[in-house]
Image 1 (cartoon, helix red, strand yellow):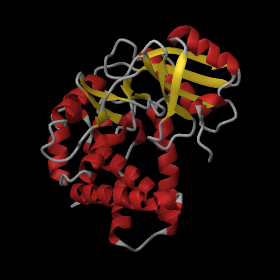
Image 2 (cartoon, helix red, strand yellow; image 1 turned 60 degrees about the horizontal axis):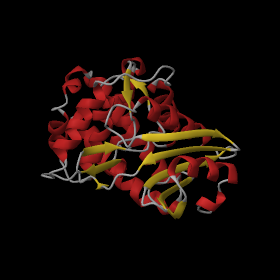
Image 3 (cartoon, one colour; image 1 turned 180 degrees about the vertical axis):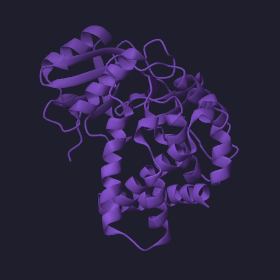
Length: 292
């Protein structure tokens, strides 16, 4: 897929952005993340700097960008994400312009000085309500469950597949429901370490759900970063909402998360399979920890 650049935006979008930000001197396309669309740092002639995200109406990712636009509009006063300064849906594109924040990918490894800030972000997230009309988390998770069921029909016999099946038998999807704002895709790549704490970026999968969901979904990322499952659970146990999470729901969600990575390791893009296999290894270790 060809990378998109500032020049790909239509002239009316250029004009609208420059009317709000100033004349664009340089637009540098960024390569972080795997989401289709345009992501670029904008430098203006008067020294301003902004971050641009955009996608065309014919992209399969358009609905995710619309969800991100709604989530960021609701996050305006939260201080947990870069502020969205302006957005537009028209001229064949969804466009968002954010404040530009200098930062780096958060370090999730054991002993990292970033961990307290990540936990603070999880606490704050668990206290924020989702925006009106936010899709329920069950919409996201139902797709994972369909993938898991398809995998279980193809892979049987190995111990961990039996563990997966047993965990899913005890899993009640309705226990994930709630009115809290859920990022749903927190990872080191979506956690930006800044001088003003850790910020969460890329809200394309944001939804409404139980306040403990982001803590659960971050946990296998901690294992990937070098924590044992017990150490990772001790980190997220500092989030008050963790205590409200039903044990079978944690295990079931851990299983679905892992099985989706198993699926991507088997059938996803070849250049991503090794990374997905490593993620599946981390998830499998967590499921084993919880089922033995």
